[in-house]
Length: 122
Image 1 (cartoon, one colour):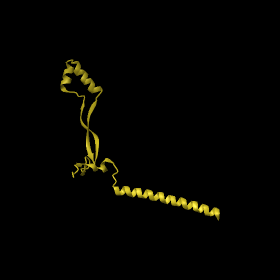
Image 2: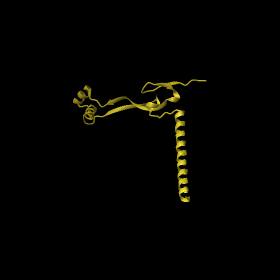
Image 3: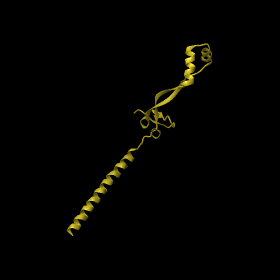
Image 4: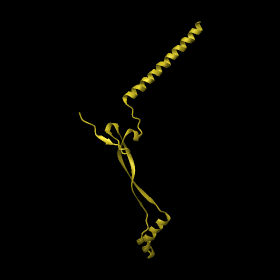
């Protein structure tokens, strides 16, 4: 019988077998770029270079910064992923409590009907 692969939680470092972990896709910043002003563009603009003047104008009047993002899949433990992880025993206990509430409700209803019948006959 084969064993499961162990995975490590990306956030907390917890290690567990793969079926107990959750795989999610995250987005992270991988770099950035912005419009810049350089010594070359300043000197060239002074000599009348149209492209250098446009570059300097763009830097001064509309500075923009682009952020590069990437996506990747990571493994998370159920706690870090926000997944409610219940064992079979907890599930059976919840089902048992639900059935017990239904039975008690039914018995109360039968008792109330019996009380109404006894008061009408009596």
